[in-house]
Length: 120
Ligand code: 5GP
Image 1 (tube, rainbow, N blue to C red):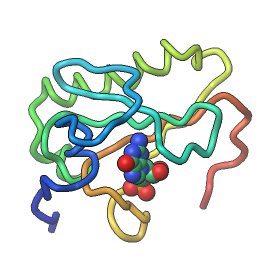
Image 2: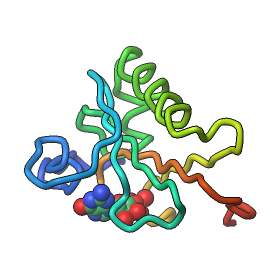
Image 3: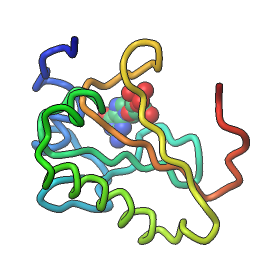
Image 4: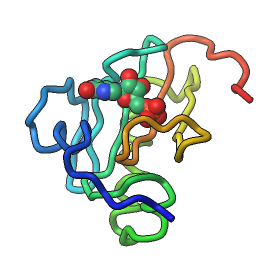
Protein backbone atom coordinates (compact mmCIF):
# COMPACT_ATOMS: atom_id res chain seq x y z
CA UNK A 1 0.00 0.00 0.00
CA UNK A 2 1.21 3.48 -0.82
CA UNK A 3 1.94 5.84 2.04
CA UNK A 4 -0.28 8.90 2.40
CA UNK A 5 1.12 11.98 0.71
CA UNK A 6 3.32 14.10 3.00
CA UNK A 7 2.88 17.74 2.01
CA UNK A 8 6.05 18.66 3.91
CA UNK A 9 8.30 16.69 1.53
CA UNK A 10 11.01 18.70 -0.19
CA UNK A 11 9.42 18.65 -3.64
CA UNK A 12 6.10 19.85 -2.23
CA UNK A 13 8.03 22.78 -0.76
CA UNK A 14 9.71 23.39 -4.12
CA UNK A 15 6.30 23.36 -5.84
CA UNK A 16 4.99 25.93 -3.35
CA UNK A 17 8.12 28.05 -3.77
CA UNK A 18 9.05 27.64 -0.10
CA UNK A 19 12.53 26.49 -1.01
CA UNK A 20 14.40 27.56 -4.14
CA UNK A 21 15.04 25.45 -7.22
CA UNK A 22 16.43 26.08 -10.68
CA UNK A 23 13.27 25.58 -12.73
CA UNK A 24 13.69 24.82 -16.41
CA UNK A 25 10.04 24.20 -17.31
CA UNK A 26 6.56 24.42 -15.86
CA UNK A 27 3.01 24.07 -17.08
CA UNK A 28 -0.41 23.23 -15.64
CA UNK A 29 0.54 19.65 -14.82
CA UNK A 30 4.30 19.45 -14.38
CA UNK A 31 7.40 21.27 -13.13
CA UNK A 32 11.02 20.50 -14.05
CA UNK A 33 14.14 21.67 -12.21
CA UNK A 34 17.80 20.81 -11.92
CA UNK A 35 18.75 18.11 -9.44
CA UNK A 36 20.68 19.60 -6.52
CA UNK A 37 23.35 16.88 -6.79
CA UNK A 38 23.71 16.17 -10.51
CA UNK A 39 25.36 12.93 -11.60
CA UNK A 40 25.45 13.85 -15.31
CA UNK A 41 25.96 17.13 -17.23
CA UNK A 42 22.18 17.25 -17.59
CA UNK A 43 20.29 15.94 -14.55
CA UNK A 44 16.77 17.30 -14.37
CA UNK A 45 13.86 16.15 -12.23
CA UNK A 46 10.36 16.31 -13.68
CA UNK A 47 7.46 16.14 -11.22
CA UNK A 48 3.69 16.35 -11.49
CA UNK A 49 2.06 19.24 -9.64
CA UNK A 50 -0.43 16.88 -8.01
CA UNK A 51 0.17 15.14 -4.67
CA UNK A 52 1.42 11.73 -5.80
CA UNK A 53 3.89 9.75 -3.71
CA UNK A 54 5.25 7.61 -6.52
CA UNK A 55 4.71 6.23 -9.99
CA UNK A 56 2.43 3.64 -8.43
CA UNK A 57 0.24 6.25 -6.77
CA UNK A 58 0.23 8.46 -9.89
CA UNK A 59 -0.63 5.71 -12.34
CA UNK A 60 -3.48 4.54 -10.09
CA UNK A 61 -5.03 7.88 -9.13
CA UNK A 62 -4.06 10.65 -11.57
CA UNK A 63 -6.45 11.82 -14.27
CA UNK A 64 -5.76 11.09 -17.92
CA UNK A 65 -5.01 14.81 -18.39
CA UNK A 66 -2.44 14.78 -15.57
CA UNK A 67 -0.78 11.66 -16.94
CA UNK A 68 -0.69 13.00 -20.49
CA UNK A 69 0.59 16.36 -19.30
CA UNK A 70 3.36 14.79 -17.24
CA UNK A 71 4.51 12.45 -20.01
CA UNK A 72 4.49 15.28 -22.55
CA UNK A 73 6.39 17.59 -20.20
CA UNK A 74 9.22 15.05 -19.89
CA UNK A 75 9.52 14.80 -23.66
CA UNK A 76 9.39 18.56 -24.01
CA UNK A 77 12.22 19.10 -21.53
CA UNK A 78 14.39 16.51 -23.28
CA UNK A 79 13.82 18.16 -26.66
CA UNK A 80 14.43 21.66 -25.27
CA UNK A 81 17.79 20.53 -23.91
CA UNK A 82 18.89 19.07 -27.24
CA UNK A 83 19.00 15.54 -25.91
CA UNK A 84 17.06 13.67 -28.56
CA UNK A 85 19.86 13.27 -31.10
CA UNK A 86 22.61 12.31 -28.63
CA UNK A 87 20.21 10.32 -26.47
CA UNK A 88 19.27 10.43 -22.81
CA UNK A 89 17.91 8.30 -19.98
CA UNK A 90 14.76 8.46 -17.87
CA UNK A 91 14.57 6.83 -14.46
CA UNK A 92 12.03 6.71 -11.66
CA UNK A 93 12.70 5.14 -8.29
CA UNK A 94 9.57 3.68 -6.71
CA UNK A 95 9.72 2.73 -3.05
CA UNK A 96 12.32 1.29 -0.75
CA UNK A 97 14.02 -1.34 -2.88
CA UNK A 98 14.64 1.32 -5.54
CA UNK A 99 15.97 3.76 -2.95
CA UNK A 100 13.33 6.45 -3.50
CA UNK A 101 14.32 9.31 -1.19
CA UNK A 102 11.70 11.96 -1.84
CA UNK A 103 8.06 10.84 -1.52
CA UNK A 104 6.73 12.93 -4.43
CA UNK A 105 6.84 11.26 -7.85
CA UNK A 106 9.83 12.39 -9.87
CA UNK A 107 11.38 11.21 -13.10
CA UNK A 108 15.12 11.77 -13.47
CA UNK A 109 16.29 12.90 -16.90
CA UNK A 110 20.00 12.24 -17.47
CA UNK A 111 22.05 13.30 -20.47
CA UNK A 112 25.00 15.21 -21.83
CA UNK A 113 27.46 12.32 -21.85
CA UNK A 114 27.48 8.63 -22.71
CA UNK A 115 25.65 7.13 -19.75
CA UNK A 116 27.02 3.63 -19.75
CA UNK A 117 25.07 0.48 -19.11
CA UNK A 118 21.90 0.52 -17.06
CA UNK A 119 22.34 -0.34 -13.39
CA UNK A 120 21.04 -3.72 -12.35
P1 5GP B 1 15.37 9.61 -5.52
O1 5GP B 1 16.51 8.94 -4.84
O2 5GP B 1 14.20 9.85 -4.59
O3 5GP B 1 14.97 8.99 -6.83
O4 5GP B 1 15.93 11.02 -5.99
C1 5GP B 1 15.85 12.17 -5.22
C2 5GP B 1 16.69 13.20 -5.94
O5 5GP B 1 16.31 14.49 -5.44
C3 5GP B 1 18.18 13.07 -5.72
O6 5GP B 1 18.84 12.95 -6.98
C4 5GP B 1 18.56 14.35 -4.97
O7 5GP B 1 19.81 14.86 -5.36
C5 5GP B 1 17.44 15.30 -5.34
N1 5GP B 1 17.13 16.30 -4.33
C6 5GP B 1 16.97 16.08 -3.00
N2 5GP B 1 16.68 17.22 -2.36
C7 5GP B 1 16.66 18.19 -3.32
C8 5GP B 1 16.42 19.60 -3.28
O8 5GP B 1 16.17 20.19 -2.24
N3 5GP B 1 16.47 20.25 -4.48
C9 5GP B 1 16.74 19.63 -5.66
N4 5GP B 1 16.77 20.37 -6.76
N5 5GP B 1 16.97 18.30 -5.73
C10 5GP B 1 16.94 17.59 -4.57
